[in-house]
Amino acid sequence: MSFFERIFGKKQSSAGIAKDRLTIMLAHERVDCKLPYLDDLRNDLIAVIKKYTSVDDVKITSHSNKSIDMLEVEIVLGKQ
Amino acid sequence: MGTIITVTSGKGGVGKSTTTANLAVGLANLGQKVVAIDFDIGLRNLDMILGLENRIVYDVVDVMEGRCNLSQALINDKKAKNLYFLPASQTKDKDILQRDKVKELLTALKESFDIVLIDSPAGIESGFEHSIFLADRALIVSTPDVSSVRDADRVIGIIDAKSEKAKNGEEVEKHIIINRIKPEMVEAGNMLSIDDVLNILALPLIGVVPDDEHIITATNTGVPVIYKENVQAAESYRRIARRILGEEIEFVNIKAKKGLFGALKGIFR
Image 1: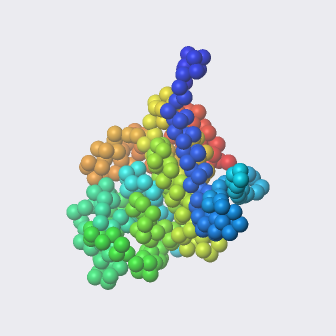
Image 2: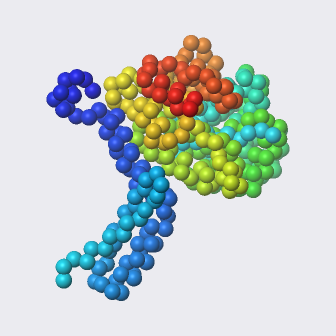
Image 3: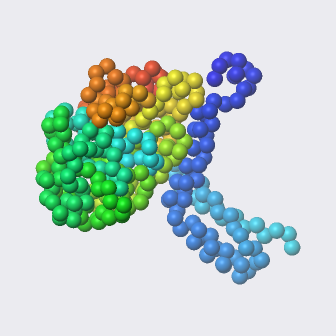
C-alpha cells in the first residue's frame, strides 16, 4: 500500500483481503473437521429442549485458545 | 528400505505432476534410486511431462491385476538412469485401485528403490486415499490463491486420518511447496506472500517455485525444467530435492526478500 493510500484510508490490498477471508473460512472449516458430531449433538439437544419449552433451535459456537476448547450452547427462550 | 513420498494438493491444476516430475529427476540426479508413480487413474499426465509417453506398454493397473510383472511395467528414464516411471492407467474407472493391491505394489517398490514418489490425483476421493495411505512423507503443493490454500488446508487435515503411519501412532512428515509465486504481485500486495500461506497452513516450507514460462516450454518438449541452467524454477527444484534428502540450503532469492527471509527463518527454526 502506498503512502497516499494509507493517508486517505484507501482500500486494503487484495492480498490482505484474501488472507482475512481465508483465515475466517478456515477457522470455521477446521472446527467442522474437529467436531464431526456437531450436527448430531445439535439435533439431540433440540429434541431434549423441545420437551420442556417451545424452543426449536439452539445456537452452538465453539471457542478455543491455547489451553482449552469450549462449546457454548445458547438457548433463546424469548418472552412469554 | 525406501521412503514413500506423496505429492498432493487437494485442488487440481496447481502443479502436482510438474513438481513430481522435476523432483523425481532431481532426486535421481543426486544419486537416489527413484520410482515415480502416477496415481491419477484415467487422467495420466506425468508421462508427457517426463517425455516418456511413447515408451508405455503396461501401466500401474496392469501390474496390480497381474497382467504383467513389475519390471515389465517400469520405464527407465532416457536421461536420468536412476529414475524409473510407472504410468497411470487410462481406464475410465478411476476407482479401480484396490487397497491391498496398492499395498502390495508399494511394498515391493520400497524394497528396491530409495524413494517412491507418488503423484496423487486432485480431490479427496479414493485415488487420493490410495496415494496417501502408505506415505512416509507428504509434499503439499499450493499456489498462493484462496482456493488452493483452502483445499491444501483441507487435505492436510485428512492426511493423518487416511494414513497407516498415523494409525500406528506416528505422523506423516508434511511440508509445503509454494508454487507459481509472482514476486512483483506479492510486493504490490496483490498476492498472498510466502509468510501468509505458511501462517495459514502452519507447516514447514520445503520450497518456493516462481511462476516461470520455462516450465511451460519444458512441458511442451517433455524435458523437465530442472535440466535447464540459469532458470530460477530449475534451481528451485534442485534445491527442494536436496532439502528432501535432509540438506539445509538457502531458498532461491525470488526478489521478494522479506517474504523469503521469513520463510528461511521458518525452516531453520
